Length: 369
Image (cartoon, rainbow, N blue to C red; front, side, top):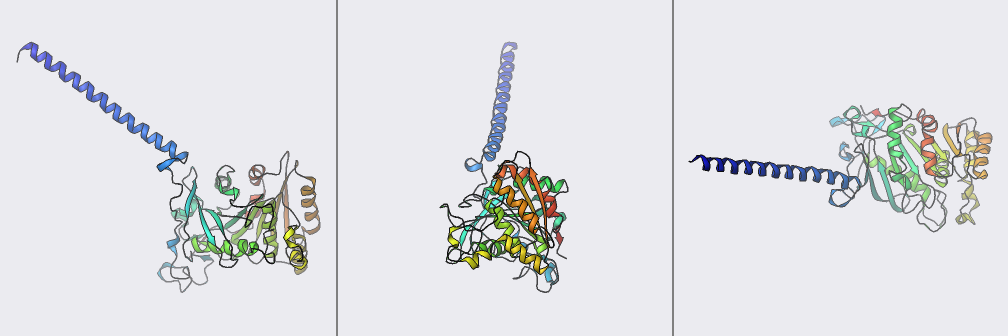
């Protein structure tokens, strides 16, 4: 090989090497851009990169035996006297509705309420601690979160914009809250301007049974829960605050606490017409009066209201606490300076007293054994 041809060969090799290097950089760049794009699309819930709509499991297969591991304590199942109820099944068909930054998922299912006869959507969420090996086979407390407004076909707590889920994780890390499982059902059977007051109004869909029977049954079927009322509470705003508070006062044997933000205090649905007896049986004031007369069981209600709310709401809270916040009915009030009648006002304020007030009365996660 001549010196000239050798130089030409070396030059060609140099060019090929540079081209190969450039192509390598291009391929790597495309891959990086692809990964970044996939992450962005996943974050924005776009296209095939989204988890939205995909099946979600919360470990329902942890149930031991037909009755959620209550029979005999064999095969690692809890003993019959355990305070924990393992998932009883059947497993619900949960689909991803949203994914939080910590990887936890909000899932949705359509529940056919066996006891109420009503069929509606329910969103659920479990904190990251639920799948932490540290809490393996622990039962977790449940918080049933109810919306205000129409309460159908959605429950506004199921979105990430109000930050209820991430706030619970934050409050737990700060020692203010329990690591609650969340159940977020629809509140009303339709959106037509009418409210069902979270009650079984004669001749109407049994929304009281839906909230206090079917929703707890769904959670027991799919999650490790706590058997006693120490593991069950409500929270809600406006009409959802009314329904949650009323559920605790009506069923103190099943639920122990509630956060009621800007609540109503009287069952005023026009559907009660002709049914005064049943209406009175769902009046929080009369239920509290009866609970005081019976001297328990003790319940705990944290109220919130903003100073810019309707004066009727503010006076309703103050009057209820003054008249019925005694004996077994324990209350606290959080006034929100400049706060309005909306969920965005209520969530941050919950971390300034109310969530700690109810959490101090509720159970930590309990080991099954």
